[in-house]
Length: 367
Image (cartoon, rainbow, N blue to C red; front, side, top):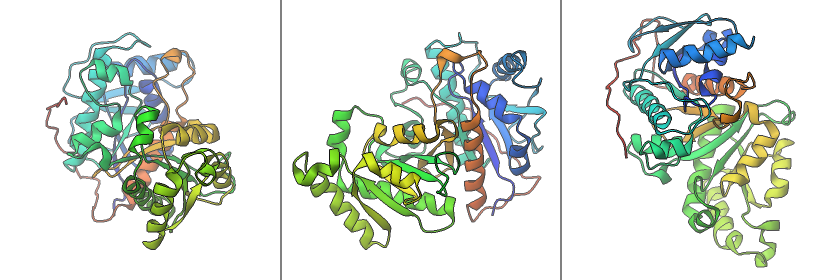
């Protein structure tokens, strides 16, 4: 078991609020008590973010020290330890989409991903990317989920995005709520066409596996219907009868505790009241909107199906509030806590205070 997980944090697009949330979260002493943290970023980028936060009276001044990837020292709330990615950093204008911003963000993520895959760290926590900046930099992926899947040698369909909302306001009678998506970053018409019984079943199995680790028990699952009112017996569409109900029956036959298809407009209210631990949503907004209404600033994005642990904030780059002292680091703190829990629960690895972080192969691959 990993007693003190080693976590790598990336900031996402440097033009967004990712650097600010990383710096603000770093100063939470409780996070350092549970994990050894590093930020894969340019020191000067984080220095700029720390300066903005300190000038706005939102954070105390913070020392920033560049360290080698194999530096064994523990992290502290007073000194931010940075592992620079191989790409030289040049400042990008705050709040502006740019190829430079997308390229630097991707370089940090791919550097951290390789380090975790090589055993030099136990988990990856990411800040928000901007999809247009990523595309401008030449990456033909819509976001982190697919970028990391391909970096790990997997097809896009082999992984799923899960939004995890820890217990708290809105979930007073729940142990937390996880939502996984059958389809993700694609237009709605394409998403509907991409829904298949095997994809529903795969998403539900991944959700069940992750929730077992988070809850330490067998989860209660539900699969959302696609059409209004669950299709009204075929009047509003037959996907429930042709795809979703057979998938639920198959999953129940495997021993999962699962209901469905259930109308999405009431399902999330039932789950928030404690009836279910996890929901399989059919498309992006069906799952994202309810979770963000219930608790956007503490929600966590977890990628299922990767050979590494990856959690992320559940918000975007928020270009419009960069440097205004409005960035909320709650989701970044939640993402760090979730990664710590998952890394601690992963069996078959050991940790010691002298275990090095490993060395980075400074190669960055575009696709």
